[in-house]
Length: 407
Image 1 (cartoon, rainbow, N blue to C red):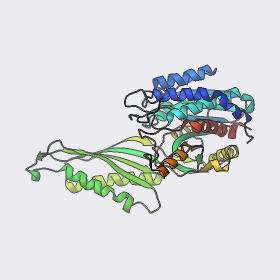
Image 2 (cartoon, helix red, strand yellow):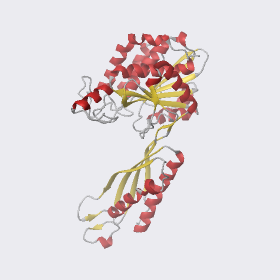
Image 3 (spheres, helix red, strand yellow):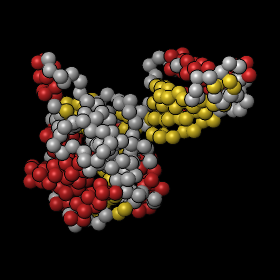
Image 4 (cartoon, rainbow, N blue to C red):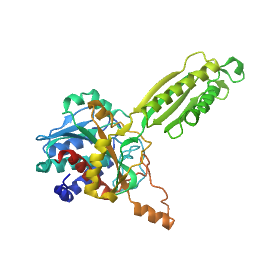
């Protein structure tokens, strides 16, 4: 790919991007309530002379058609989290209990910047560029909402899809890898039914508290004894709820589980094991009613195409230099981005952008000051450094797109 000379002009628009980023950060909105966020994004796009499609509640899409060539879809998520910010930034959240604690404001600002650069430099590329601003990534509802609202019929079918995410890694670096880079994620609410009784008369009960404890212990064997060493799986019991009073044996208990996997076969096996263990323990306890399983917040596996990742990584390496593009370590967090390319039946790649000041944290640790850990995504202290993160993320979006559109 020929290095795009027009990226040298990015300085002229960075002030605008910084202002957009800070405004989005000040006014965060949770999943499927990103109304003002979507309005701001739409306003910026129409200000560039582009048409905007409203797809999937608060989703926004713009399509730039620029002659013959491939079609590339680039996605940014836009929702915030129900987290109270504690960064003490001068542009910190002004919304009580809501914060951009995962960097989606940075994603949106970077994609807007890429749109502007590509729109103003159409002589440097040929094809179709689709910029998609997706709501509700945090609860795995946004990509599905856009698909259910007819996304695949309302925009041209892309040849490839691209996305990126800021992470608590060294700013100025980009991290790519083929294969699984984000785990599949499943949450499940399990309700087990016992027989209530007075606390002094346990012989008249089927105690769901004891049963829940037995289930929790047995679930630990799924990873330790049923999963082959070297395979990745996580089974977490995040909540166990039963009863309200010390002398009442309740008639039911509720468990909330979270599962993470990198392999579809492992995912199916783990879920089957969970249901087998719960049913088996309930039968052993003599419960009067079968347990119920309610699955929610289900995230697909993010499994990068080897071909697309190679193409994009080569372009990023050529532009940024080999020392700036590193091998990514798969993350155990989850994403719903891959729902979008899967709906079109196209390949994709997803990369990470470093966003913390490595020198600052290293210096603090050496001086023995209070900063000892880098705040991770979803932390109330999560605060990507604007420089150089915003510029790097914007250029990465453009370079990724031009690896297909640049000829």
